[in-house]
Image 1 (tube, rainbow, N blue to C red):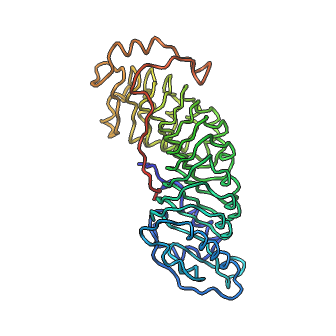
Image 2: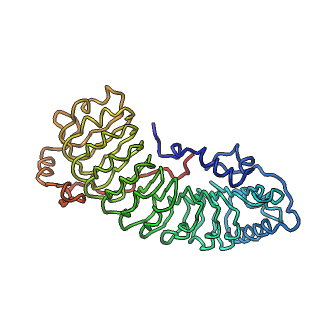
Image 3: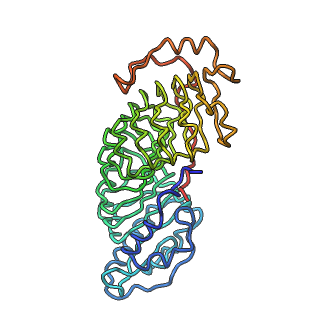
Length: 404
């Protein structure tokens, strides 16, 4: 079954590209967990004479160490002297155009619980391809000098204490493919330019982003997009159809979106995970979802869907988990009424299903069906919100650690 992870991102493509950039980079880190392991193995190198790249790295790392005020695991305790390739969490490799020159190509301080901030001198690390800082206590804003990291391929700043608006310096990184800034305190709107970048993964969940989901969302090339636990509001735009050639996991949990779920979601033929739970989505479940042959997990729970559950969805060949609880569904077509017989995990509680246990009261259901929703005329649906505390948005916990 699909999970909320990067298992679907075809990591061998990432490795292949990095090998083209830094041929010996993965010789150092093959045995390490890509996102979650604290690194303890290092090669012992000396800075050769006239290696200006490692000299610049030395300046950058010493400036960084000076603004680290808590390091409970002493990961930076050996950040001393000019031999930066010996430092914990620092990876060196040969410069592609001159293999006699070593450069700092990767930094992995995941789960270090380090407190401090990112100094402007980090812009001197121009050979950096990977920067992994998951699960620390770094704070403040990102320095604009990070725009100098033109080879940066993966940026993981998740589970820290960064603040301010969306860090637009990220938009200037031409080689970036993997972006993870979840579990921080970023706020304001998401810039539409984010979805014009050639990214493979976008994790912006569990921040304070507001405004609406940009209408150009579908222009993204990402296979995984997670917006969960923000306050983006608005509707899921029909332009989502343009996402068809890439998107495999789309998580919009608790993002305050409303209106109808557009039928264009059924065009996302590669989709394996769709989770729009804990929102205010109204209207029928689009029958077009029945065309998503690769769909494994579908969560429509805690919304205001009404009408029927189309049987075509329930017979999807890959479906293993289907949740539509806490809505106003009145009928389950065919096999949808007994998904257990197909070995599918499902939850249909708190709907308006006759002869099913744990349903809403007749009074609730009658009141709901007096409110009309015309999705064909207005995808955002002119409707009156149902007065029901269970549809109110709330924080939905998601893992704060990096995907494996």
